[in-house]
Image (cartoon, rainbow, N blue to C red; front, side, top):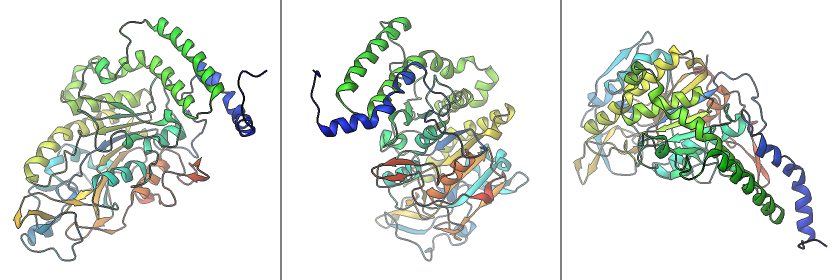
Length: 460
């Protein structure tokens, strides 16, 4: 007699998933490394890994990588053909920062990113990005997950699903954000309906010791051998649990325990920057953003597929007032580390296979934000036009793609959506964005949904 009864529906469901469960023991004993999902690139990749600098809150494109001399010419005057903004804005507000040409390409860059600008001939600047709404939450979801409303897997989760990690002892996707999580929290690196193991692993890079960087990385009361025995017991309990219930989250939970066990030595090695030569540490700097950028290089060097570097929790770049002081302070925190990373990757022969990205969820208005009728000397959210740049694997450096209008209010020439950007990134990683799909709720989903065009003009 069976120890429990089940219905005809249960019988059919159990039969349907039986083949999939045959691989569970193998999953527990021999975790997959590259290609966790069993998939392979659709074609030869130009890049193998991604490092994404996410400037949370929306950096001003007209103060960084999109110079607009018309703002000075028309300073204090109304901007024609302006769009509806979230808050009341006034006249044209010239950038308080100087721009100059850099490199053989002669691309103009603000003094805010003078160190990064030394690498401009490696960089493709996309000046015609646009989003859908002028609000942080939906724009963060759009830029990270490809949809501003529905819960969808993040780009890092899709890469992890399609390609996996090249190191079985480290996660395929790591998100570092010092001082806490950004708005929308872990949704920015979620796996949604993809297997749970594909989601990003959050690291509070404000911390310096491995034990505090990654919670519970080491047990205070058990050796590795003891933990191994505990995991064997846990596996047996999970197997008993599986026989009673059907839950697709079980495999992800089992794999997360296994990965946590294996990470105890691998993560300690990856996050320990004291192993680096002093001149490398000095090049990146001792600030939190210098440290996390150096850790990012160490992670991708060890096979992590994507590392996302958040510039702080909250919205540090959300500068509605006094943008001269706030943008100057913020840029000073990351300009040096970005330049150091590009130099370091190139010297190690890694830049050709590493895609480096920079940008936020939207830009800022070229008109000054008003409080009543008084200017606040800051800029409101602007989703109509902003800038993102990419460098490294497969990118045609010294390139400017697209443009905003004369004042920088809206994308004008070659507008680029988040779907186009994601399609291009997947292409560089050897993935056809139309073919990287996952069956869920009766339809095939993809990162770009039914949109997206690869930006071939910025590719080598």
